[in-house]
Image 1: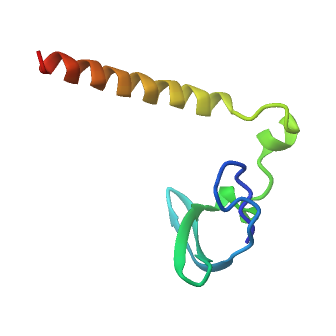
Image 2 (image 1 turned 180 degrees about the vertical axis):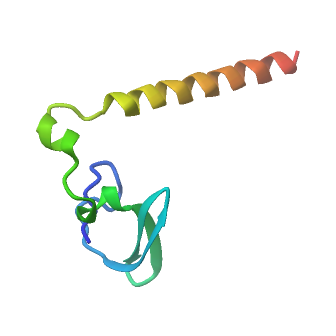
Length: 90
């Protein structure tokens, strides 16, 4: 299998599939350098098929709206936790 996720450190590499499992989504276990096994979502490899968003955007957009919304939620959570912690210290 080839890692196709553009931001993954193994992007472009081809690896042997050691195992496949499904837990909410399909995961592949890939042997990396004969030394370790990495677990990746199948959609991050060529086993997941072509992502319709990636195909339609044709490289014009690096981010999906859903991913950006989730990122904004995470940043807000982290910011809120940091402000709460700073307030507890006073």
